[in-house]
Image 1: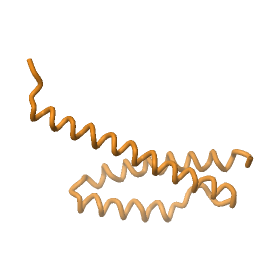
Image 2: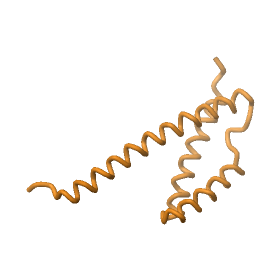
Image 3: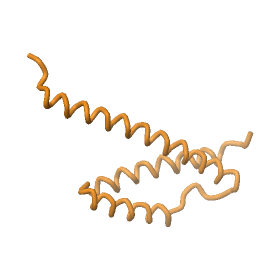
Length: 97
């Protein structure tokens, strides 16, 4: 049985979006790694809870405007923030070269 062309089209769009998301996340993490190196070099804390909460509020509002579940968007962003903080903590504990 051949694949349904409508379903195949949807799936191709999903695959394209997934690829774009991976590239966007990779770019975001390249930038946050630079931030982590800067923070480590300047002895700044790995996390900034005030900024994190402002970002979450801002992105929840964007999610609502985009008709995306704000709870999901917050969970996703908190996961990313936790990973970034982990990278920043690692940068702070690694001796400068």
